[in-house]
Image: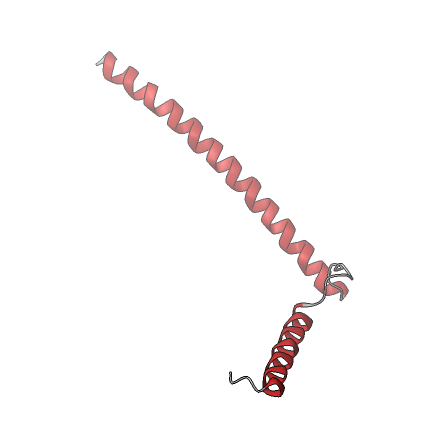
Length: 84
């Protein structure tokens, strides 16, 4: 009986430590997530988004520029008599 009890204790202690560590890490991650969500809510409430780099165009602008380049390429092909 003593061997079974010592095996049980030898397995139970590391399992309890691992479970406690997992719980602590999970709680810390949850706290960080809630703080990040609160920060985003405050940014939205203030009415401004984080500043973007002025040298990087907006995604919508990049799409429009790509569309214009494609149209220009097609017009140049038509002018050159190339069949697309």
